[in-house]
Length: 403
Length: 82
Image 1 (cartoon, each protein chain N blue to C red):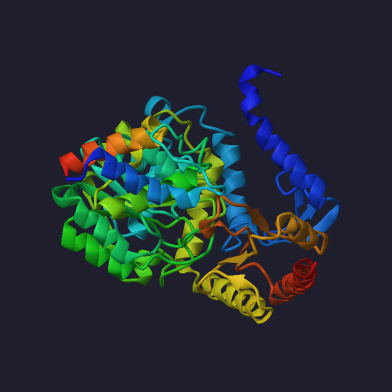
Image 2 (cartoon, rainbow over the protein chains, first blue to last red; image 1 turned 120 degrees about the horizontal axis):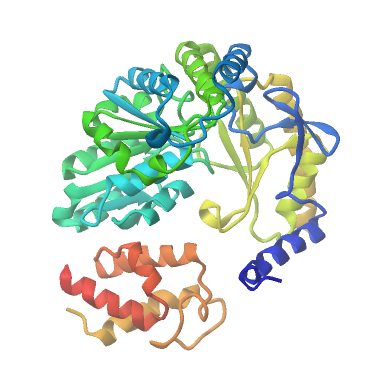
């Protein structure tokens, strides 16, 4: 074995042991074919996808598909380089203008992925004199952004405004050079940030606030602009980042700001400057999806109806869930049963239901999670099938607990 | 201002509960390799240390911290600066 690869051996051994003990291989799932926004062929069987983050179900929307097809025919398969060197396509700029209009902001910057958006913005916005004060449950892209940058990094306890304030206060004069980072909906447990309280604190200490609306865009707010809109604090949020890969059914990321000087930062961001820009087809479907997201209250209603149906059903079965109804619903499993998470995940798959298996240490609180994400495209009947599958899992879990 | 020994004693108190087996802690004890903390637990420990000493401890120091003694040294500097 190559000596450099040796350090990954324990990881592979752990994975192999998991597969051997549970008979399931959650990390090598091959989706043989997507059938619709909510169904796919996996292991030769049709399964209901309840782990795609496809919140509005727009991946198969006929208008989005048509826009992508037309763009690929007209402008080719890829841009083959970054916007700084190869130039921006007119559609990149059009999407930025449309995003700025949608968020009522002076400017927007489009990135190649949501991960890259956080990497670029967080690493560049703050320098060695500045501080990043982030919620402990923030996404890996935010953590990685802090590692790429030079700012001092401090964490506050998840969704705990008092803990945030204690740490801001401790910073003294540096509080005004601090970027507080939170998420609209947290990706693992589906809970919202207490944005009113956070905004109040950041205002009192003169700090800046970035909200990652990756999981809340299209999901929260009258127009789908996310938690800041829902909480009516958009004027107090300095930066919003997000992704096209969830509600917009595509790939890409963005940052908008109420500060027109955001534009000054564009070419200082290495993850923006040195990455190939999004392909014409991705930009085209995203633009189309943004229009749908903007006007379609009905899709949001359907999404929340589905989320409520699943959350209530799982609650009635006695599962330990995240703290609030949300399109992200995490079933927390007992830590004591070692092989159970993979076993139960495999049981769900054999019942025709695909969810995300998330194992510690990547999970908040250290519980293994069977994480579901709902879509407006799910039918109530599909939710009922998912609930039946969880009922089977529940029975198995009881058995495991008894033995 | 706490002495280095006082800082060390408080660090031992904070770190001890993380060890699954009883372990003799010293300045040379390695936080991850000997006590067994993973990277997530180290970050949790940092928050506890911040609250215990009422000082900001940026995560940026972590790559330079291997042993409890090294952590105490960083903490001494941070306490002096604060």
